Image (tube, rainbow, N blue to C red; front, side):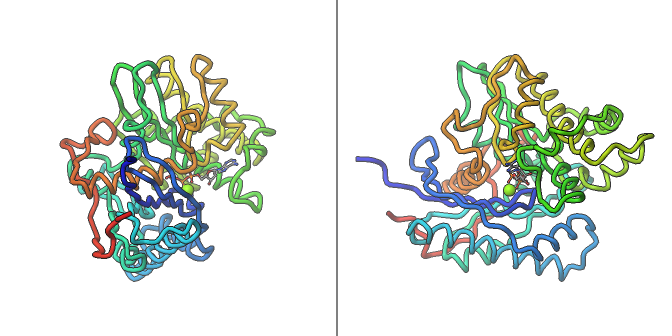
Length: 377
Ligand SMILES: Nc1ncnc2c1ncn2[C@@H]1O[C@H](COP(=O)(O)OP(=O)(O)OP(=O)(O)O)[C@@H](O)[C@H]1O
Ligand SMILES: [Mg+2]
């Protein structure tokens, strides 16, 4: 008899603010099985207000509180709509793992913290499903960076004893997980994934991202600008390390543009930003992976021009997507938070040390229980 299903929902809204990813996952077997998934756009005004909050950091507390609730409502709706679309009722779900929307990530200060909005009380109350959230802060309390955490699932379902593997998540920020055939592993944020490319094209064209990297592909890489970008000290820091919009944002880019003598054409800036993402990823992978398989996931895995550059910069490696490993690259992050919710509900402390630098295994996240959320099938 097949094992009874254990259904969980993962909710993820990343740095790009492109939408809320919702994945329903069956975690009854060793490898997670995706049951259904969808992405829900954030309302334009909410997206704008979150971007303002991320950029300004001096927002009134009332605004922080309001956005926390508004986002919680959106997360709840994303979960409920996905369930309705496949005719699964809330009582069949054991728990939701909700990452929340990062608005401030400061892992290296005297009092390190990471702030994710999207009130889990609201999610639990509106969906009737036990919600696990606030994953990053426990890791930080244990001395970790709080990020990246998705490598926990990468390690669980993508490691191989016969191939050195790297899972490369190209979201707003890019992170890599190195899983060597000899069992060695590590992970860290390499720097920008799409965040600067998205910023720049939105300044010059009425679009949110450069579809397939087509605009960038027809531009010319400006070497002076590329060198300025590559001079960023974060890139030379050793792992564990994590970053976000706090560092890599429009202001950061304009400072580098101001530092070079001749202003490049906007399209050449786009080409240079794509090359910057490719170069920082390839640099980290060429150092840490040796020869092996590079598996892309996240929205940037759809950027064909970026894929071509990564292939050119890493000729010794095969560069494909996690589809090759049987995992849909669009939903891996959301699935990871569903999996983390299961670990927490099952009382399993996870070892984040190789990825975040935490000093001890950690039971990640707070639990917001719902008595109706039995997960009984
Ligand atoms: N066809 C495409 N061509 C180029 N870029 C794309 C395409 N589709 C998606 N993207 C990029 O992917 C981004 C969204 O990716 P994703 O959702 O993985 O990032 P995220 O929300 O920042 O996640 P996280 O920070 O958790 O990794 C978009 O903002 C866009 O830049
Ligand atoms: Mg996203």
